[in-house]
Image (cartoon, rainbow, N blue to C red):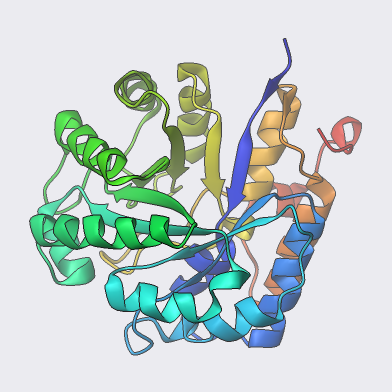
Length: 305
């Protein structure tokens, strides 16, 4: 039986937010439209964090108002709290999904959003209710799900308890982020096997970073455990503002290439994603590091799978 996965492209949010300089709105619009044309049906395009905290994403409203993507493309925004949702709702008709988040690590959560995990989850329950009342899809993310450089290995039970609370609040998708690249393939298989059993009826999403070079291996292990929903960033853009050294997400073009070589369908045009990464490289004025961007795709799998 042919397997199929869904990939959400997160570069326009998770990737751009980690760049040292602001990317022009015109360039963001052009790159998002190129990604939509490459066949992605899910794209994370903006974050409504305070502009003084992440100035790289301060133009979220303008980006949402200006992008022109096919009707079937589901656009997601990230909202850190009620105020962030207030700002996002100014363009309520321009996106379909809103994501809330927490770090499983108490220390990372405090450094990231200046609140305890308990405080964050109380607010998340309120925000989730408001998201659903607007008729939007509510997604949730548990960051540092596989480990934290401040606290070490995070107990699986703690991560899945937080995920269950998100599900109880109405999140229909829960992503698990390897925020600082501390997962390994053996644990990825164990974790996603447990997560899929613990969260019936919830879409379970894998989000790996390539900080220590294990991102694609982790994605393969998650796939073998039964996970069919993934997030990645074109050009291997991204990372985490805290701590230093947390490099980018797995590259979308590398993930798509791996899946296509395994005859796993993605619905994505690989050469078009590589072209989008090349365009981002030009915009940023520096070489990007994905393997597919450097080596190119394998010729016999150029077709969309």
